[in-house]
Length: 230
Image (cartoon, rainbow, N blue to C red; front, side):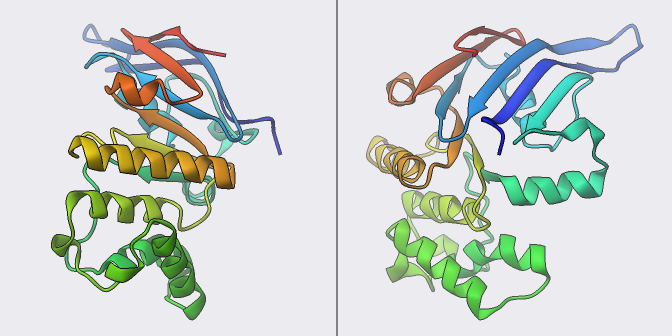
């Protein structure tokens, strides 16, 4: 296992490359995240945070530089291998929980494992139920997503992100749509999982109070890391 779960080396991203309208979004970013670290990523709107998160999550490729996930140079992988690596190593929690409204909490948490293996099983269901217990939602396991509060739905999304035991979770404004009490509960849950399981977190947030409770704050301005890189 590499010391860093994530390493970015001189990462750059441009759009409309080679045309008069070429736009450079990310500029020579160097950044590393250790196993077990809980890091906040902050910056104003348009600073490049979303682009950076998409590249880290292997949803987009950089124009230059390297992305290493647990020591694997992702630039050497084809799309199938990228998909497999993403499924094994990375979990996602979004600002909008993106639960399937026709599915129960349990079925939503089972989805990543069912998608990976192509079928449901007793073991997948048992894992999902254990995760719902961990996030305090075993009592609503059979509730449809629309019948839960916003805070409950986001906790289901956290459980879903952990379904395949990823080493890195990318959380994009996971408390942005919640009231202050629910936001604090969801953040505390992420922090507890980080400490108990050693899962690494990269958390995009505009909430400075929450960011200060992370191990480190990384600030992005105009596509450059200006503070907090290692």
